Image (tube, rainbow, N blue to C red; front, side, top):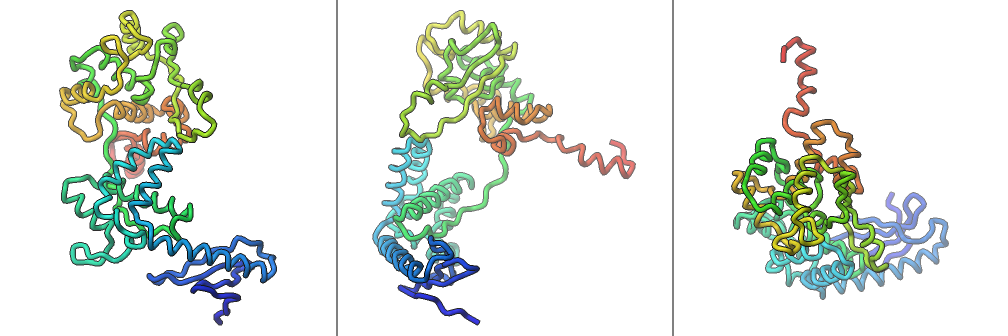
Length: 369
């Protein structure tokens, strides 16, 4: 038996489900969404009807707006909002939007999920974007990142009432897991390459502390305790002095011990220091050491896609996990607030780590290792 709606307006229906006031409707693609009305279940019918009418008015206005605002306008407003919030992701989103703008810029939000023929089949414009980018040699993960930025911006617009609801944004499956750590031979090859002293120290700091590039470049000698063998990458004083309205995310930094190999390099560098910064070149702090580090990796014959200082950060985490170092210690050294970030992204074990599991079977059936 189909229960008749208590009220109906503009194609939306007010009813009750499991004691709650709910709103139902049917979409053009055959979906039948159900949402709970923001009133108490015990509220009288007249109050529920009044709130229902108010909800419909707002929904209708949003739908009308959907037909006027373009995806380009949404992306512009989203990027501006991220910048106003001080989010470091703003510039990455802006870069992704450059790749998306030509196909999606003048579309209305509903057009994103509308049927679109791609390679002879009905798909969406997201599929068309993926095919076009792939033909230009872009990696699967890069394409996924671009479309994820679009999905996030449209969801943001829906939450703020700019559009009625976020359209479906198809994103390709993630590519195969890339190796993000180096082997022992690769690390030795990197350390064996001739390079400028500041580049070598930069590499040693990344390898033995797992610190991010920014943390290393901002490190000053007053936070390096050679007698106590510790480095304080933290910048609590900067966070305390931040404006109350600044909601930007500050990546965590750690207080770490100094390995003897690193200590020797630091002692040598401090004797020649001309600035307060640990990493300096020709009497100045360094802003971007990418070229110097890249040349060292290339000279070492390392051509894997994921290279540079961040690969050394992953290497430390992976090698520590292989040594059965407590995951909480690895988390603390990397400065992660969430241990799952450490476990899932950084501290990945190398080949051979799970061999014990296979050996358990071999031992039971009498096969020697």
